Length: 282
Image 1: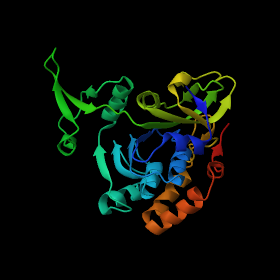
Image 2: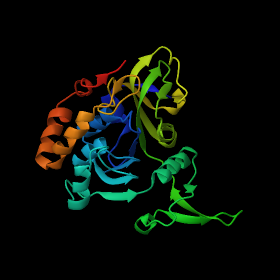
Image 3: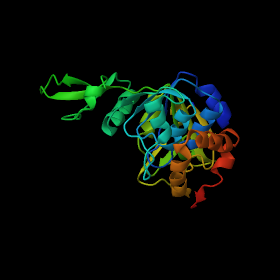
Image 4: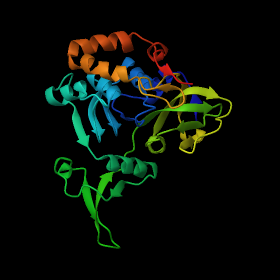
């Protein structure tokens, strides 16, 4: 059942050292505010799971929060590399980072299997590619009905699932609109969940055709954090801050400049102050 909490209290209660944590949101609704709070609270030894680890995971990994990354693509979208992830993988700074790489399809199916409480996901994929050679978690199974050989991956059942959404009502029902990605599956697959939202309203209101409502009984903590996905965008609320992504490339290349930026903009700043630069569209 959904509980309304502050962001600091939600992270303190839900996220523990050594947890597997999935922070999802595809191109928009990326839970930056929640990720920053995990950094502020100094969580360590996390296994981070995300289909597209971009800036928020670059920051978490650069601050030494993670021991392992499970992913299907990594980079600074439209700009280039995630330099803090590269530094961790290639040079072990701030410490070594194990990686487990999958395809987008495999990750999506693994979340869905976790949501259905199944032990693994099965898909037509990984045919004629080299990824199974370096990822022993990718296996094969023969269909008992047709004899077709299919790929399998273990279900994803994170200890904690964290997403951002547009609205929640007073009961804790959550509305996601726009590109919904795999947020629904992450919430259903995770043992504990944090959902940050742009606003809490009396009624969720008219929804678009491309929308998902998460019932309150699927959600753990609901936290009102306006601008909580900045610098990504929240459809109907604010646009993507493209200049931030471009600037991050220079900031994150150097360890000292990265640490100085994180201290000034995350460790010493509240979520509201960081999100104040979100470019409002509604």
